[in-house]
Length: 94
Image 1 (cartoon, rainbow, N blue to C red):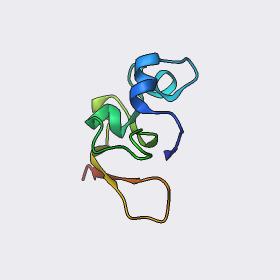
Image 2 (cartoon, rainbow, N blue to C red):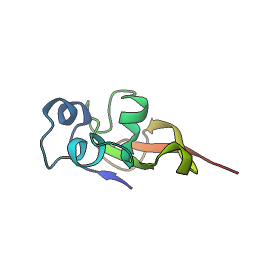
Image 3 (tube, rainbow, N blue to C red):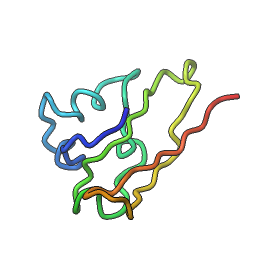
């Protein structure tokens, strides 16, 4: 899952509003979704100004059932958008 959620990761994690992504997707126990920021921190200056509001989510399962992992991500600019994009790298078990 990915998208422009219009919720800054840092502010969301600090505030923890019950209907925002941090509480809904990320603050729960496994298995659940984890964002690129939750897994690898905030990189660069943000995706919209200094805010990190564009996300790539990864379904994190219990280790014995995990077949795919997000291994990193980068914030990229130069697109025809008012947002910087996120490109995530994944690894698949062979």
